[in-house]
Image (cartoon, rainbow, N blue to C red; front, top):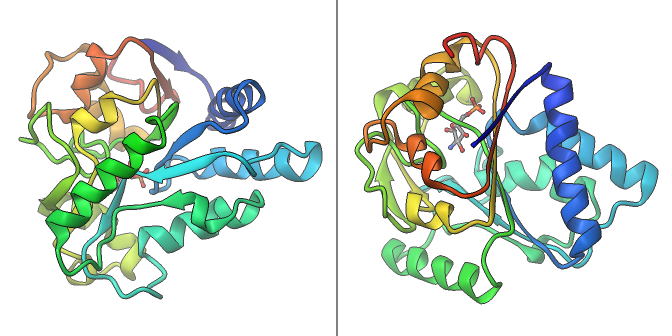
Length: 241
Ligand code: GLP
């Protein structure tokens, strides 16, 4: 595991460098996209490069990590809409080249299986961008998730719903109770994992991720088993290392 400690802006540049190097080498690369606040600076940096240097996403494909269950198609916090606003629309990416798990499907189990098939049919994810929850989740794989899990429905913990209430007008009751998420086994098949964490609130999760024993109780620790994982931290997130 490669651990880098720098300023949030420097971290965003490093992550964008990895994405750009991949796209230059392999224009039809498959990118794994995360929501949450952690990757926002990376998306800003990629949008800037697209505008200023013509960095092209035209042939690339994207797969999202997770989605809330049951949020209306036009809900601004539906991850599909968030990802379209934060990156897809800003880098000239055709929306149909980016997919996410369908949180509005009638048969959610079937939607999860179909999503796994789509990722496999695209040849798997080349580079997966990740954030980390304060409880050590990646995607929405909450503590106790099987380390070999695949895309499936999960119940969000109270902690995660409280953490995400800020996106729902501060009201935890507005945060959905369920989600669909790529499993830890799915995420581990991506060829390069790039995780970003900033702020003191992430320090314990980062401590476990980098120095703790591999455990389903801190799901991100599975990344210790990955042959190519990059962990990008600011000083505050790294303060317990
Ligand atoms: C969210 C998302 C994760 C994200 C994490 C951290 O709930 N499902 O994909 O990485 O929690 O969020 P943030 O980056 O906003 O701290």
